[in-house]
Length: 267
Image 1 (cartoon, rainbow, N blue to C red):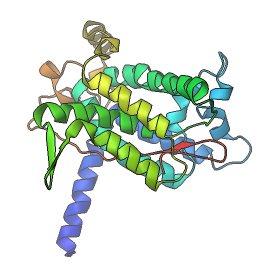
Image 2: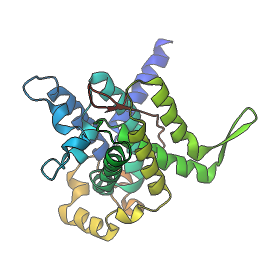
Image 3: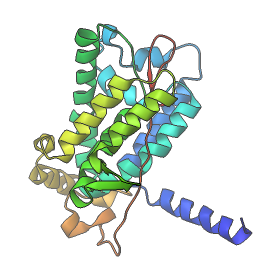
């Protein structure tokens, strides 16, 4: 690759990272911090925060929200970050920072987690623990698949026409077959919840925009927080200014994986 082309690619990558919205930045940072904490031996952060059906109780319900941030190793965390960042960035840009925080720290994490626990415990009679941000990766892929299906229902491959909404399911099967120790059930639960959100059945779980606007105004979040995206995109646009061009971002799949007796969400 010519030096100029290499410099251009580096410049584009740097520009993309600089423009990442606030919640996406925080998620990536917490994933990296959780990996760093996991390097020490005094406290097993993976055992503490993984979604383990046998360990779920009132006192350990925090696991339903902590497990997406915890990963088996650096490669697992790095690959999940690569897959999650463009998908989460696109979601936050569309719905706003406060809405993203409310959904991903709430129903878009707890619903697939509880669904996994119920199916793993009572249907499969298993106790495999899972961890990793691929919960969010496959959920967002489900959301994107529904969006794509509405504008482009089929993907033509030779003489076959494959419904575009099935692509996340195909990826789940492929990842399960190619990456040992991945949780097929965990990925499947995430995709199904993503489908429901994409179809609009879970949109009622988002906080009312009137309330979010009041919070933004009361706390002056646009003025105080850099890279914050207002819930009222029509008035303020991205980062509080009207956008000059449409922003798009792609995404790729990720996995749920095993760590000893448990499984990780990612390779």
